[in-house]
Image (cartoon, rainbow, N blue to C red; front, top):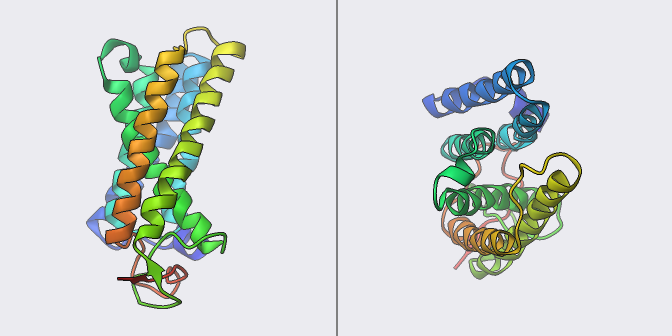
Length: 207
């Protein structure tokens, strides 16, 4: 992780992802100075998800996608787009949960908990395509549940501006589950790691 996190950017995608990370950090500082403390907290919550793709050495295309998705999700909350734009909440729950499910799947694979991600160099024992298709949606539903708990805690103890209703919670979890299905299919078909020994700790795909 340390090697990948400190690795200098080598491609346009690497540079773009790092620019988005810098924007995320500057956004937290700006929110702390000019916006409400809750807005700064929401922006800060995005930082771990911005850093993890680089720490895990994931492919540049996924790194950019993850950073852009997480930033849009966080700042949509700050600018109240979830209330003002119909359906925006559902779209972001689908996309953001899919991104987080991929990251979680990589972590679970590399820590030896369960093989969910294919390696790019063909190392290790085979992994059946159906494994991520079945299990990654379950990971996404777990992420969705935690997400909704955090929203409820924020509404209960921080600010009643946070929109929490039963219908909203169920709809968000449904879209998160569908995002997990998309993430599982993606992982079954497309490697998300880089072609380097440092990242070849995941398992390959067998047909």
